[in-house]
Image (cartoon, rainbow, N blue to C red; front, top):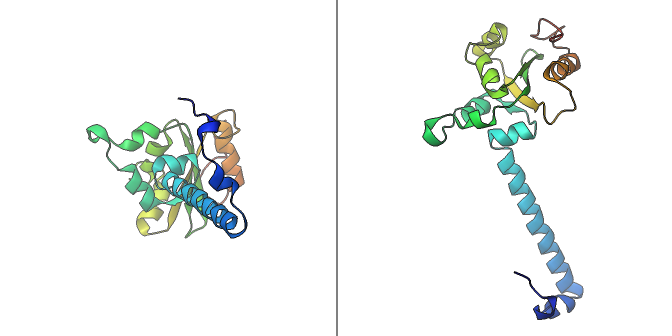
Length: 170
C-alpha cells in the first residue's frame, strides 16, 4: 500500500514553533528512549538475550533461566545451546574457570550440578559467589573454539591462579 505525501496533512508539524516544538521533540526523545530500554531489558532477561549480549549473570539466575520449560515440556534453553566458551567467575576466591563446548548452556550447567569441574562444584556447594558469562564463537573474532578458549584462559590467568589445569586445548 502506497501513501501519497500530498494526501497527508502536515500542517500541524510545519506550524510547530517555540514551546510546541520543544515539547514534541522532548516527547519523541522520551518515547524512543523508553522503547530502547524495554528492548534492552527484554534481551537481557532471557537466556538467549544474555548469551547474545555476553552479559555476566549470577549462577542462580542462570539455573533459573536454564530450567524454564518450553513447548512439549522440554528445556527452552536447548534451542539456544550454541558453540562458544563460558566464563565462570568465583568472586569469593577471585578465580576463573574457562570452558568450551559445542553446547555451552548444557556444559556450563554441568559445573553446578556436580557433573563438571569438581573444584568449581565444591566451591559452589560451599557457598562461594559465582557468576557466569557466555561468548559465542559466532560473535567472536576467533577462528575456532580452541583459540577462543585459550584467549580467555590467558586473559583471566585461569591456568595459573584459576581452575583450569592447562592453557587450553592444543
